[in-house]
Image 1 (tube, rainbow, N blue to C red):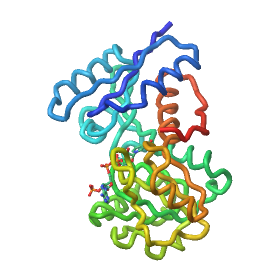
Image 2: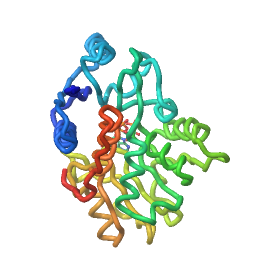
Image 3: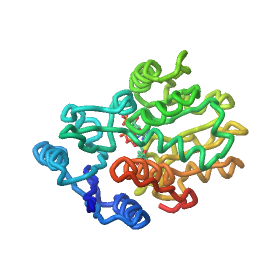
Length: 282
Ligand code: NAP
């Protein structure tokens, strides 16, 4: 019987919740295995290469990748799933016949949790406003466009939002592709009544600065919107407090984290774990 050696690489990894999630999955599936953190600083590319070679040789069975390696690792992989290629970042690696594969489970993980949190409401494509245009935003926008949503992306560097929309509109697996529109950061709350979903994909509000919020305090929310904050530490972010004060349903990103981990675990072990969608804890 395989005894699974799983892990996460990134830098820094001090507060990672991955070992807890994956060790829980191993136990629930009745599988032998371990999960380790491989902290590799960005100035040690040779250490990252060595880790990939261990994966290729089968000494590690599955590896998650997080900041800052999600994009820089791409040239060292042999094959990407269509989602990873379109998003331009990987978070899940494995070896198949000596070839290194990369996938991005953040995108389906987000969509899974959106549906888990907001039920049938989320099953119908609507209009979303995504705040931030970094790696996580790319996964979220890819997922939404593929599910038929219209998306506006607000970024403090407008060119980042423009590049994101240009890349992902054409990569969406739908024809005609739903529209992705870049928005200047100063207009992130403007005309918001046209938005049904607001997603925070910036680190604003994350520990150790929980007082920050991407939503301007004086701005009104769209009256019937849902708010999803990718940040999950703290569990009750400033943005979620603002949304709830306005009477809106709101969710943090813990469920997305658990869902993307479960999808990676399924890929590595073949065991499908249903993630507990209730915990809002950090
Ligand atoms: P990233 O690639 O660094 O992108 C962050 C984005 O936020 C960039 O567009 C950045 O703009 C913008 N931003 C940062 N500080 C800002 C500020 N003060 N004002 C306005 N915009 C600002 O990071 P990421 O990987 O996308 O992660 C974003 C957040 O999502 C993090 O909190 C991360 O922990 C969370 N996340 C959660 C999950 C989950 O499973 N729940 C998964 C992935 C990420 P610049 O490029 O101009 O700095």
